[in-house]
Image (cartoon, rainbow, N blue to C red):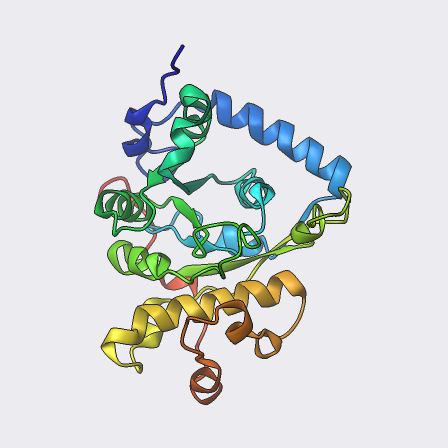
Amino acid sequence: MAFNIHEEYWDRPLAGNNQSNRIPHGVALFLSGLFSFLCKVLFRFRVEGKEIVDAFAGKTTGAILVSPHYSYLDVIIMFLSVRPKGWVRLIARDSLFRAGKGFLGMVISSVGAFPIKRGSADRTALKRAARMLKNGEWVGIFPEGTRRGKGSAAPELHGGAALIARMGKAPLIPLGLENVSKVKQKGQRVRFPRITARFGTPVELSSFDFLPKEERMDGCSWYVMREAYALTRGCKPEEVNMAELFPDSKDYSQVFADHPISAFDPATLPDYSDKE
């Protein structure tokens, strides 16, 4: 038996400013409640910097959450990070929507996720994400594209987050996932460390205009991922060895040491009015 993966949900709002014809919240409420309970009991889960989520309430534009990717638990933690005041629309690889004869696709579509084709510039997915941002929704992405440690190849740093930011005219926010990587390490038993989701400082793509045009999106993605890793590890961004994490990417360490990036203030965004 094949399950209905609810493709129609991919173009409907889950939250945001215009909620006409929105995705029913039943499955999302059930799973967020269940996962929140389990994460608090098993991992003493907490969120730091949630005032950033509050700062976007009622604004015309949402924001893009950017995180490292260690395991499937990352997805759950990112999903819970904006609860109970918001929902995040997660971008997932298209093959997940076909898993279990579509059962997984049915579930994750019902909580607002939508697919992206790996290894290609999936314009349909990018346009969907941009529309969601313009409707005041949150969009979550893992720029590494695959889980760190899966296989022998070093993860690549993709520029999709910055491209979505440009198309959706929205800021990017690094999200640290402290101790998620310690839950299950290769060859070791499952552990239950305290997990913290930690919001960083929002930035906007225009802050990278000092870079050559062809490097702006790569530089932006590199910067936001370094911030996310610093938040994950509880260290200064300068202490993150990005050359080791992404050996095939350009190292912008000295560039950003010479050109500090200013924070984006959500208060500068217009307030939403249903008369617009």
